Picture 1 (tube, protein in one colour):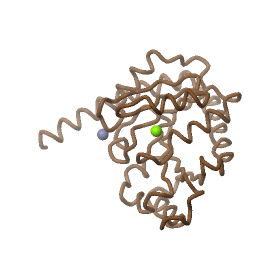
Picture 2: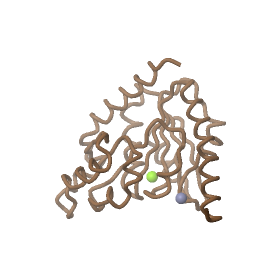
Picture 3: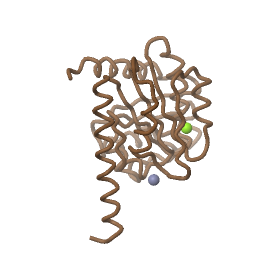
Length: 224
Ligand code: MG
Ligand code: ZN
C-alpha cells in the first residue's frame, strides 16, 4: 500500500469513529439528521429556506450550514426563520468531516430538536466519502446541470437515500432530460426516493414536507 493511500485510510477510519459517536448521540435524542449534498448552486440553501419557513410551527429544526469561506448561507437561513442555525466554515476544505460537525454539536442545543440538517460544501466528490453521523444523505441536482451527473459521480448517488431534482420551472430551457437523469440515478441506486421540485416557484414541495415529517415521526418511534 502506498504512503498516501495509508494516510487516507487512517483519516477515513478516524472519521468513521467520530461519525458513529455523532450517530449514537442523535439516536439517543431521536433527532433525524440529513446531510445535504450537491454541486454548488443546485439549491441546498433554497430548499432549507423553504422548509424552515413552511414547517416552523410543526418541527423544531436545526441547521449546520457548511461553507468554504462565508456565512452567507447561514444568514439566509436565519432570515428565513431558522432559529438554530450555525455556520461551519471549512476555511478552504472542500467537504465537511465528522470532527467539524462534532465540534459544532458541542454547543448546539439538541433538546427538543426534531431534525438536524447539515448543509455540506457544494461538491459531489469527497463529501460522498465522509460520514457525518447522518441518517441519510439527500443529494440535489438542478435542471441547469447535466443529466449525466449520476453517471459522473456514482459514489454520491449510491450513498444517498434521497434525490431532489430542483429548478423544474426551468425545464425546457436547457438540454436537461428529466427521464434520463432519473434513469441514470435509478440505475446506480434503485432505492433512491425522488422528488421533483422548484424552490423558486414552490412546486412539488408538499411531498418533500410530507416525507420529511413522516421520517421525523419514524425516528421518534424507534425504540432505543
Ligand atoms: Mg448553500
Ligand atoms: Zn474534499
